[in-house]
Image (cartoon, rainbow, N blue to C red; front, side):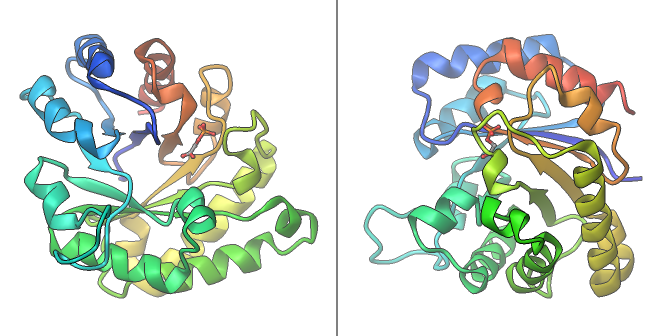
Length: 249
Ligand code: PGA
């Protein structure tokens, strides 16, 4: 059985004042029955790791460079994230793909850099609105999976986040049937390529997950949790999403 995962992506939000949210979250879920991950701005990783103490909450980065170190001003590497206490890193988020022209091939090398540093790679994929309307969603997803996931991926080192680009930060979500179709397709692609390891990889849904829609999304087969942006910033919003996920286990 795949252990469910509620992941929060704080994006470019958060300062030391927001460590109070971590305190509230770990107090509210002292012994969570699902895995929890927060990916804050890199400046907060070490402080969050310290703040959470022995709590099983995992802390992750939002991106990593392909190289372990070197002359790359402004970038951060997977070993540096790991040394700060991170255990996971997002790679290929649609905002990175759009803002920084990241390709599937680059994302795959970043995922490999994550593995080399002992980090779990949360590999993000998803179609644009134009691709959805053109009826090419499954083709896009197939190509992103094929190009973004390294051959060395395992159930332990890789999580897939399916995030329709048009659902991120918009308040719009696909229908339950659309989510079920894509998640079922992703599962079949993963098992075809990675056999039992592919069966064990978690596939998260992301894009406008909120307390009000979380339970419906989590009821879908092959949805193993969520990657949450805006609603992960406050424990009062993320808490009910975690509770909805816990209700499925
Ligand atoms: P959102 O972001 O929940 O604010 O839509 C999700 C994401 O980008 O991971």
